[in-house]
Image 1 (cartoon, rainbow, N blue to C red):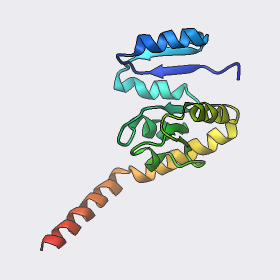
Image 2: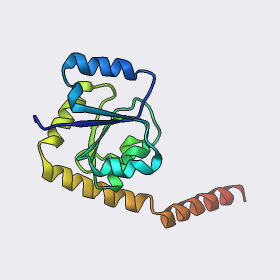
Image 3: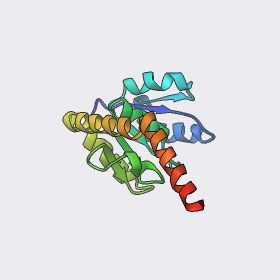
Image 4: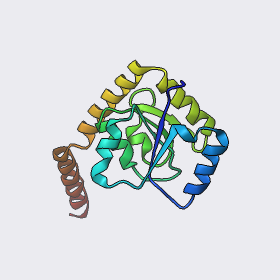
Length: 154
């Protein structure tokens, strides 16, 4: 566990509070805060990670989770909104109840200790997202929805 490092991608109004808290906890040296990154940099950032921790409190389908899974990185996320669409507990990552920070920490430790599990989850996540977000399938699904709606009206 001593080798754990964190990359915090993004920014916000509370950044200085977070930095203060990291310093108070004595872990500031283990956390690299990138600030906002250009969209074309996301893949490079994800390539250097073992897993993605998505600790947002609200978000539709977290794009960062899909991006990580497409790069075969498992995802740890709060169980919010659209996260369960792609973060399948024990299959593509781990879901934690909203704001359960201790649970989030346990999930991080669980994946940090098991490279084989991370690999299996990452591969399963990539397969899931390639199937679910294939452009041909998405077009077919939209066409089927329009047809169903048109048939209802007709």
